[in-house]
Length: 274
Ligand code: A3P
Image (cartoon, rainbow, N blue to C red; front, side, top):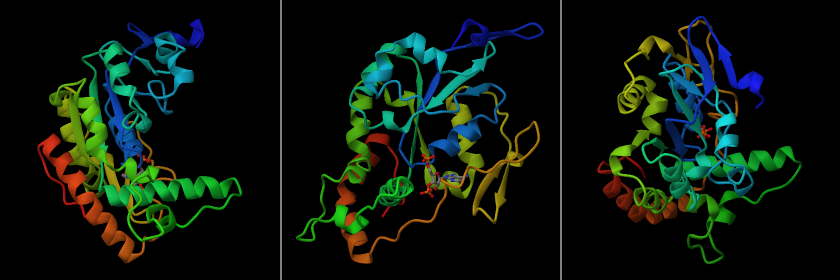
């Protein structure tokens, strides 16, 4: 960014770009966009709209913290800057790098049923490939080996093994510095999850139930910002999933039982996952 857009003076406060005080680190397809947009309803929060991919991509990381700061939105003194990059969660280098930036940064992790997340992840890749005119194998072919057993090497399955990734973050950050948001609960009823997130971030309660309404056309909650207008997430969020055959689903759920149990143990709570 140039000098002219890094600083802007309003009546008596200076808006400038600041490093984030909180980062939504994942999980991919967990509801990270919804969480970011909903947090941005808070007047004390300034969010980076685009994913930054600073701590997970070498080409960005090597540009240094000055580059990272320049990706942040303008904020006023006292406002909390928040960015989200779901790629951080499973990137082995990310926890150490985030800590090196600021060991006090607050981390938000939004999780959802990992079997459902996997299907959503597959659906996203399928969609991207189709847009480029490419074919993609059916999900069952990627998830199951020829002998019918689960292929633990499938990338989208790896990303659903939350305990493995969280383990690396917990080597660098105390548990109390990582707030877990229930992505399935956020879909059903966003306000209570937002209240908990506000509390974790040390923000005064400003987000209200009146900031949300259920849009029956979209089938999801949409946003009613204080400033007026209404806004739903774009059509890439909350899209129908390619169905996973019942037999494959059963195998997947059986496979995930132990990884899920280990994740519950790590975070000290359980979720009603398959
Ligand atoms: P699906 O598209 O699989 O339903 P991310 O932003 O991390 O990519 O997560 C996308 C997911 O956010 C969507 O996955 C959807 O389930 C979830 N989501 C949560 N709240 C939503 C909302 N209010 N509107 C749309 N999608 C929402």
